[in-house]
Length: 472
Ligand code: G6P
Image 1 (cartoon, protein in one colour):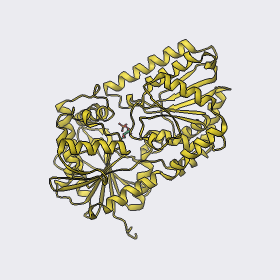
Image 2: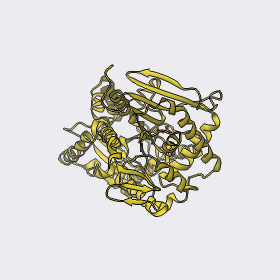
Image 3: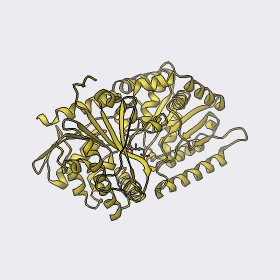
Image 4: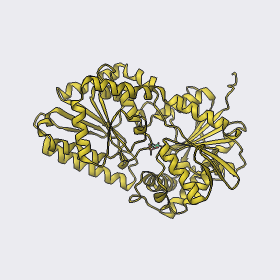
């Protein structure tokens, strides 16, 4: 096979879209398609956790057994973790410490030494396992908060490859971040990457502020160049997009049409409003329900105009805070529906299962309001998918939290403060009453961003900068 002029790419992330998991990610994990097509173009491998726990594969100095598969032009390599590693690294440090902290929820963050140690051990195991698969000219691209110290671990094994890191979540303000024990050590380890990407200028700014303030690094705010102990890292913002053409193609399938028709037939003459989120406290779901309840209270004559569909597949179910948010949502939906249902009408449909992207596209198009109100979100691709799936001749209205990264780009959405029930309630009213011309105008402007700043552009920008970054 003719060798691509581009360097081979080694993508490393906690989860790998292995073939058996494909086709179900949809809006809940829009990244996999983009990385797969980038890997097809560059060649290379995608390495990560299999998602399985098994006791046999603990590290025996070789990082454990690697399962290599080739599917549709992409090679994936995965390792199992032990149950203890899953507890300490995935449920523990990644999702009970860093995730809440990075979403500004230090009230939920658990700072356990065992979690931190397990996290370091798994990062070391990742390094041990993937190291032999990396060739000298490969570019390495590590993803997300599970693997912040991996670049350092790889470099300490003698690798001198270009290494980039992208954080899919927000980066919190310094005043919150310093609540993390050994925060300096963690960020210092990140500064072994050559390039660090953030979703928005806001998260980038917080990171640069931290490096200057807490590490005394030499930081150039304009270029994002950070120098510490003779090492140079560049940090920049790369807002992620969706695979626009893929979403459009999915909208055009029989499956999407059938899903849309099914939804419309069931809502009769009421306006369908949709939310699609992983069941996560960062998504502002109870606050969203409070806003809807406030709408029903404030505009009693409009109760019959609206039906709200919340699709919320459960996530990270072994983590306490996720069990609590699930219980809270069940209670709130029950309360609102109990108070507001008629024998032939339930105002809130709460669906705990995932759907294919084609189904979601059909639902998005049939819903004249998209409600995306996270309390904090790195980007939020559901907002972008909702825009892409609309009929440009009669588009729906996107109500979007101003605290989602996407709000920096989709400024023509109806922007809301997700903490304020009145704000959400008012936005629903505005969306219901918005005339066709205004809807078309807002949608057309958002569509330009969603179409142009797509995920292919995002991967191209990041990989191009990664190739150039050591040249200055
Ligand atoms: C967020 C994270 C991803 C993660 C995804 C699903 O989008 O940024 O890294 O893969 O949630 O969460 P899970 O814990 O199921 O991988």
